[in-house]
Amino acid sequence: MKYSGKHINKTSDLTRGWQSLSPATYRGSTVVYPDYRSFINRGAGGRKAYTYGLAGTPTSRTLEARLSELEAAIDTFLVPSGLLAVTLTMLSVLEPGDKVAIPETVYGPVRRFAHETLLKLGIQTHYYDPRETQNIPFDDPHLRLIWIESPGSITMEVQDITGICKKASQKGILVGCDNSWASPFLCKPIKLGADLVVEAVSKTLSGHSDLLMGSISVGSEPLAEKIHGTIRALGVGVSPDDCFLALRGMETAELRLAHAGHSARLIAEQLNSPDGFPLVDKVLHPELSNAANQALWETQYVGSNGVFSLILKDEEDEAHAARYSSLETFSLGASWGGTHSLLAPSVITDNRCAGRYDGKRFLRLSVGLEPVELLAGDLDQFFAGPTR
Ligand SMILES: *Cc1c(COP(=O)(O)O)cnc(C)c1O
Image (tube, rainbow, N blue to C red):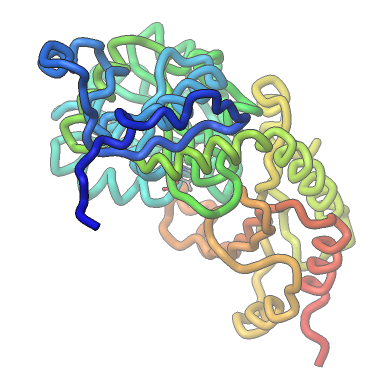
């Protein structure tokens, strides 16, 4: 049979009468128009007009609208990874001669972007200790953007989002917040005063370890135009299939967070008990009553994710490696926020926090949806060490 070239949507009415509970996945590069004038004026509808698959589909618009609502933002932009959400934001708002203040505990790959890309563009980075707001150089006339990541990657320091935003706005400095740990279900940085917020949609929001995506949500029209301009200039877009999966994952995000957060807190409390686990030097979970920044956690978050870390006492490398052979429920792997529980061991060696964590053995736990008894049993085995 020969290809007829007939326009499928034009010639069929098969969607009439179809209603379902799930969003449709609209695929397409080309957008077609009913007449000459609509084609010529296709860009006149502004940012949200449908002009080309790369510029958005009804499926990506559905996800953007859902995220804007959750973040209390005026608009949201989707990009292919959480890392790109951070870097594209910085590229959009920073100019040669500007300075950006980044917490020492920032998601690791952002450092590479700062020294490889920002530096080449004549943009300087100032790393600050996230535990004290006064460590941010608010009076530096070149400071254009303050980046917040709360709690910090691996080391889990909660930052004073409200305090930083208040001071920054007095000085006309922008504040961007990486809110991936909390997700908009547990914290809404724009409501706390941030100018924009990014999420690694790859993590808790999509929640099933099966896609990569980032979002940038903004609180003002000029910022929306800036981010949109960079996205269009660079040719960034996301797959409608991934948007569908993210939307589906978000339906259960609050329930998953509640479950994982509860299990993780139980586990953290157990590990935090004074003489139960000699190998545990410190439990880093913002909700624990002995966490340094517990008061800040309490005022800015309505709950906890299942992700927290341990500092382990040092031991011989081989003995340490052997502990992982007994794991039955936890898997070893980077990333977090999925249904399966993960352990991610690391040793900090890069002098990132004025050396205060150097040489320390960290273990990040991402608690998923398995029964908490199985997870606790796995950890008991892990801390008991292999039986010889
Ligand atoms: C994982 C992560 C990112 C990056 O997300 P990807 O989608 O994996 O690129 C950004 N920020 C934080 C805090 C993260 O944990």
